[in-house]
Length: 159
Image 1 (cartoon, rainbow, N blue to C red):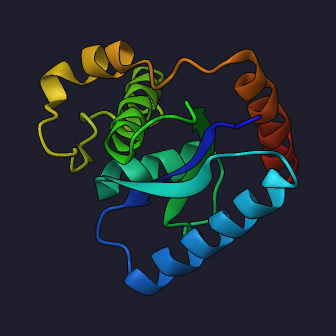
Image 2 (cartoon, rainbow, N blue to C red):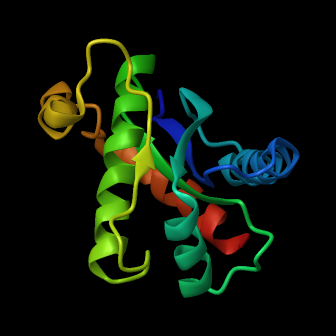
């Protein structure tokens, strides 16, 4: 059985020191590898998105993270047959959706959050949702879904 691609999304504070981001990424990827266990996956990778400093500071306060936190990471799965461009686009779409939800809940402050992302060639922000949905990259098989649930449970238990 082939498994899903597991993607660690990294929502980063704009302007954070590279050394702090590197440590944050290392911790997140270590946690991701531990969460995989022996589950069958197509691969594990990280996608970075940057959030403007005021919005990231508001998020950090809202979820009670220390002021030294420069990255917030989460885990999601995409189809095991997804191309690298589809995986990146799906990561951007899911992060954009999450940021919009956090903004609507008032967790990112009062001014609109600015999410910076570099989409794969040929992808446009205006058609991102439609293209991601049409590509089927988020449509997991029942087996991929079961594998992801196991991995996500492990990820969530290592906070």
